[in-house]
Length: 243
Image (cartoon, rainbow, N blue to C red; front, side):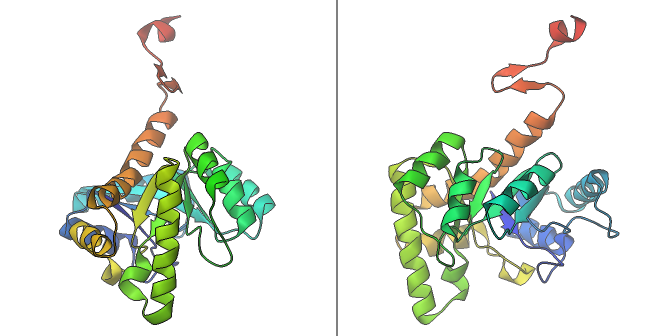
């Protein structure tokens, strides 16, 4: 199971600290969703991020996935950013919370995950769920408020999560689950995430599937970026190379 984290400078802890804590808590990997989170010396070259991720994997024994979380003002800006990052990041996430951005994300196959779709004025309906299913765009269930919010804010967040779950599960749209940690101190072990979600009415197996989905997305995209991939179900083999 994987957790998707905000590392410094977007968060309060380095990617290294997140990876070490995730390993101790029993995760198989972390998805570093901060754009500069894996830039060890302030660079932004793909090879620098790849080396840093490999070093963290070696040091901590967990997978480290280079991702990006795009927070755009509108669909036009989002489209340009997705085009810029798709070829260089293993996982591309787009922040929703606005009806236009939510719609753009689920209709764009280059987006892997629509994150926080119910934030702000955003809503999620059956049309968006069908589009997410058809385009294999995962919908994030942010359980952060379950751990960190109180009072009315927590109640509203849980109501939104339950509504989102009902729509997503009914239309069989893919999903991911995260506690959305911005610090290693906000990381929760997988069993804690599952137990807390179960306490407010979520099926444990469904939550576990959402935690595993991050790793499945990363594995799929790494395969697609490999030289052997042609299209789903078709890979370059000896005969194609010789021909």
